[in-house]
Amino acid sequence: MPSEVMTRLDPKSHAAAKGMSDLSIRNLFIVPTIVFLIVFNIFPLLYSLGYSFTDFRASTNAPANFVGLQNYRELLNDPFIWKNFSITAKYVLISVTGQVIVGFGLAMLLNRSIPAKGLITTLLLLPMMLSMAVVGLFWKLLYDPNFGIINYFLGLGKFEWLADPDMALYAIAIVDIWMWAPFVMLLSLAGLSAVPKHLYEAAEIDRAGSFYTFFRITLPLVAPILMIAIIFRTMEAFKTFDLAYVLSSQPNTELIAIRLYKMAFQEWQTGMSSAFAYIVLIMVVAITNIYVKYLNKVKAR
Amino acid sequence: MAGVRTPREKWTNRTAIAAVFLALIIMLTPIYWITATAFKPRNLATTIPPTVFFTPEVSPFVKLFTKRSQLREQPTQEEYESAPWWEKMVVDGGEKVVRNRKTGEVRSSGYSDRFKNSLIVSIISTVVAVCMGTLTAYGFSRFKVKGEDDWMFFILSTRMLPPVVVAIPMFLMYRVVGLNDTHLGLIILYTAFNLSFAVWIMKGFIDEIPKEYEEAALVDGYTRMQAFFKVVLPEALTGMAATAVFCFITAWNEYAFALIMTNRNAQTAPPYIPSQVGSGLPDWTVIAAGTLLFLIPVAIFTFLLRNHLLRGMSFGAIRK
Image (tube, rainbow over the protein chains, first blue to last red):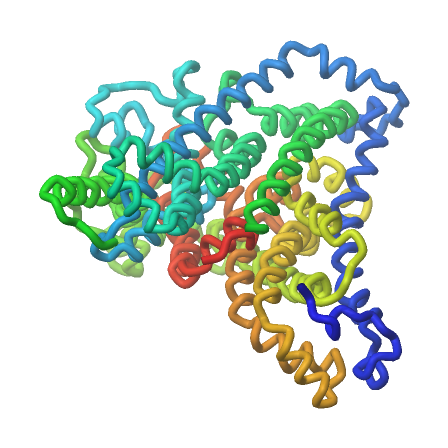
């Protein structure tokens, strides 16, 4: 709870008598940020909302014609867009599941005394700090069917990771798992270290099996933090652009963000892409809402 | 962790440690491979079996910074002898360094400019975002704000927007005011998404500074403003530094906005490096050299940040 003195926005307060009032300091500190974000994030969205009802193309000088809801109707009836959505859903599922298994597994392994544990943890976290576009690109060399080290070490011969239409999405997801499993690991470690030791001791006295201990003690207590990791990664995977864009140009790996980019900046269907952006936006805001609810829940504990 | 007692537990523990080291090796292999490739001669970068042992050389870095073309005719002995050591390296690789016809100056590749652009845009956007973010975080932390949770959600939600969604209207608006392909245009975009992050993280840090410090200062006759600058800010410096590093890394790594909003003048390194792969047989040693230089600052920062990573990655929600 904030104390009485600090929260009073009293223009006649002791401090205010000499300097600026608390109220004006508060506004001076907060308002510029809010204005900045409204001008550069919300206003542009309102601007494009207008365009989403037109057939505007930014590549021509032709004036925009109002077409009403036609863009939205066309998009929602377009089977190709639905395909993009299903590819994205598949990608999110593969990559988030992989990250949770690898990340949580690593956290379980690390949750004991290990020589040089701090250094190992930091090294394991390195991939998630790197640029997806730049490092992701380098995986093209690792995946190369002729001289990539992955095929060599796994003994897969000339396996086509990125050219095979069925494999490419998995190949991209593997890079994503490599980069972001450390994130799940980081949060899981925090969750695991917060589990009270006496619970394990009690379980041991009761001669509970390790299976029972894991499902009845570890998992339920780590679940809220793990959930944050899952929601956050779901949201990020849903937005994936960099990685898939530099690694593959196949139709089978065309995620929503890539379709949107192509529609807006290669086909120059500005009006249509604005409408599409709005559909994506609504979905992201929905996931963000769930995310923040969970954040507050964990914070409150 | 205490209590490794039975032989079975000891065995489990050893297996786990072995598994951790195996995982570490697998996780770091791609980074090692980038580093190794950056010091290989071109013909060893793409061999079967992969070349693990080789004499490292710096020719990939020489090639990274210079403009080159295919060597059509071998230089005469005399020409070769008079060339500087780094130019000989390029010639040995079957290429020649392109020089300005009139002045004879070596023409540089686009990399150093892109690197400089990355630095300018990342540093300025970080400084602005951390300064504004700290003030706003203080405002939310210490004063009553009506609908505080809603404002904080609004601030966070701007960060969650997919870049391409924001880029479509921004591109159109920038075109009107002439901000496409400028540093300022990119700085504004990067400041916007780093600002929301900075507010969230800094609020966590400032919440932890005891309010009694300021109260004491106010009683001593400081104005609120003085109390903020002389009491709160010094306490918040560590947090600001950590926040700044996070913001810098985010801006440094950003790809989508840079790809859409810039092409020559203000282009940063992330869209530039992939554009060098193009069609045909790319020279992976040069790409690895460019990638390695680009990654080094981030790797150093990750080590400096190691104790704040959890907080930063969870938007300040989880603290150790």
